[in-house]
Structures are given as C-alpha cells and as structure tokens.
Figure: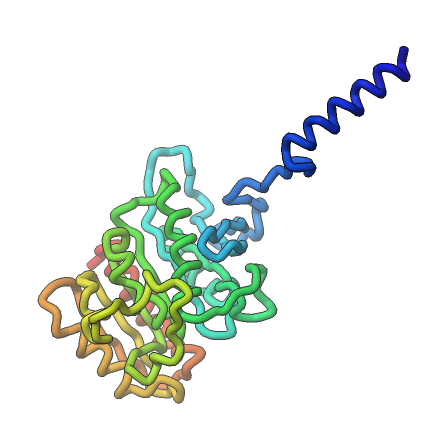
Length: 285
C-alpha cells in the first residue's frame, strides 16, 4: 500500500511540474529585505537593508540612521536626508554626516551605488549618472513608504559625482523632494561624458540644453565648496551656483570654506555645513 501511495505521489508531482513548464516554482525574496540593527552610536542607531532595483534587476544595499530615542510607533515624523556618495565610494562614505544628522533629530540613509566600487554591498552595475539616479530612486521609493518620515521634508545630499547625479535628475524627482544639498560638486558640459542612456528618464531629454535641464528643478539649492578642492575648482562650483541663482524660486545659497580638499571640508567647513543644514531643515534661528 505504501509503495502504491509513493507511485501515485510521484505521478502527481510529475504532472504538476509539467504544468509549470517542468521546473519547480522559485520563491523570490521580498524587498525591502531588512538585515537588522547594524550599529549603536552616540545619539543614534543604524539598520541595514537591501532593496530591489527593478529597472536594473539588481540589489541596492542601504543603511538607515535614526535618533536613538525615536519611536517609530509614536506617530511623530522625522525629516529625511538621502545621501549619494561620489565616484568609487560606497554606503559607508557618508556615514559620518548621517550620524551627525541623527544628533539633530534628522533621519538619514546612505546607500551603495551599484558598481561604484568593489567594496559596496550593492550588486554590480555601470555606476554612471543615470544608473546612480536609478538607485537613488529605489531609496526614494523606500523612504516614501515609511509612515514615520515627514513626506514634505525629504532632502537629497550629494558629494562629487553624487552631487552631479542629483543635479541632472532633480527635475525627475522634483515633486518628491524639498531641497538638494551638495558638497564638492559642480556641473559643466565637460561632464557630459559621464551621462549614459541606460535609464534615460533621469537625464537630459531630447530638445533640452544642460542649463534647461538643471534649471527645470525649482526647489531649494544649497552648495558647499572647499577652496582646497583640486577636482572641482571654485570657478566651476561657483558657476553652478550662479546658474541656479538665476531662478526666481527656491532658496539658493553657496558657502565657500577655506582649506579642505575634494574629499573633505576643513573642520571649520564641516561645522559650518552642519549648522547651515540644521538651520535650514529644522528652521532654527
């Protein structure tokens, strides 16, 4: 009898597999996939997660930073800053700033752009500007799903190529973000070589000039630049600011600090930046 039941079960399974094309069904992982607490640090806590970039069919690794005393179930809401690292960086590149923000009561996310470096936990990718913007969109959609985030206070922060990514894609995201904040960045047509058509919705559109593309974003714009930056000259960064300053909408501010380098503002520059961000996002005096 047992042998007969085993034969019947085998036949039933064979029929089921045939109906499915001969393959067993695969349970795809559900995203975002939360990995748990990453770190406790003074004034805050971080959590790691993966989300799925459907456009690129790849995973994007992110880290979420929250003030340690914040209760997600309280009904209170926090501002959110999504950061975009520079070329060759990873999800840890801007963690110091993210941790500073939590000390102000501002939540933050850092993430690794796919293919930007071997050190990122995100999947492989081209890491061009449109690819980075596609990954940024994944993080934005994740943030928009969080009930404890103030949806009227979502900001983008970028450094170097991260700043360029934000500038060229800000028109696409303009209805979802309150402002953009940049450090060690700038834009000119010499950067066009970084732009690809992998995800064309995020970059310059047919019939647009680059100036028109950047100026189509009407929201707040704040830029920091170190005089010691040997990659983006003061002229290039200041020229980018002056272009945005031709608009008649949105805040437009530029802060040039002495010393520092492309990789980091001086200590005085960092102190100025965090104070400006606090005053701007939290509207303190």
